[in-house]
Length: 80
Image 1 (cartoon, rainbow, N blue to C red):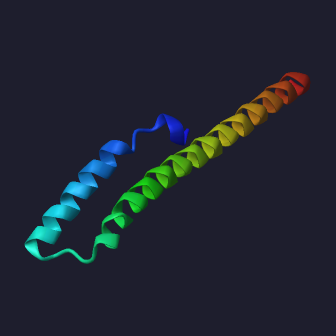
Image 2: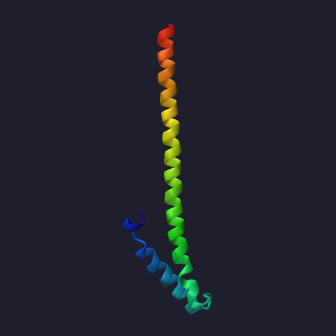
């Protein structure tokens, strides 16, 4: 999945902002410029992972509801 995502745009945007901060005196050393790029990639991948976990939990819950309803329907037709 990581190969299909375009993080080059994020890197260029972050480098531009870091350069502007350094020009204005708000930036640190040159090694600090790569940290926002790494953190934005990590945050993006973490958000995707959290979304996948959420969808998995919802799908599992939906299957449990469907299974319960099928069993309930079978029981009610057997009893009544």
